[in-house]
Length: 355
View (tube, rainbow, N blue to C red):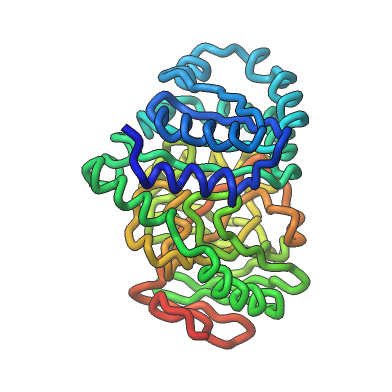
């Protein structure tokens, strides 16, 4: 049975996030768990005179692929996916995570190699600038968040169905501060980190690419990061949780990386390529409907009163230049202790914006 919140979300994704037009071909990647939502999305697309093209994920395929794929298969470029990326007008990703630890035992060299090979496809999608992704509420995600499925559904739809016009007003102010800013400093217990944002432009995030949304981000100047940072929440990437991450930067580059759990995996990710040791993104969360960490980056980086820094790839529209197959967001919680300064002036303290 279709949840009325799914009706609202489907319309939001089609009309607002990717603005489907007559004649468009829209690719939808999904799992069977999201059947009711996806059919409603398709209905909305078809009513606009556009064509939905659905790819349904098979449970267990990712594990089977990375366990048994030989080197020549891992290195094979996906020509069909490239063709689709060029031909479709838009992309909707409805992720249906059944087992968040499915790839925890997979050799990270295999997944890292595959990311390098498929990176041109991701870049094609980013250039299209007409895509959106959403984490469908599943039992696996609810379990990771320490919630029942019903509680998690309430959490998800509460985070997504926002007044985006009101959020736009807030983020317009935030963008102006970042655009004028030159130097960022993050200070809290076990953290004192500085970097330049001079000449870079802030990017507002209002549900056009991520659902839910609520962040403003900017690309640090690549060689400017100095100092150290210790993260409060585990860094999660490819199904692996890395706890107690502490990074030390010199001239923009990570020169020391330690963790209390899965430190070896952290080091392996930093060695994917040259750009993996540099920052590609700095952002803050302003979705105050998201109040708790649920181990899903699509939600966690938007938590109001937190900041996040991504190792690796920079999104180029704000002037970022760092290139990498890695893009790993790590979250620093400033709601209890800590402050964020831009050009020596506090703009966030105790998780509250000071403007």
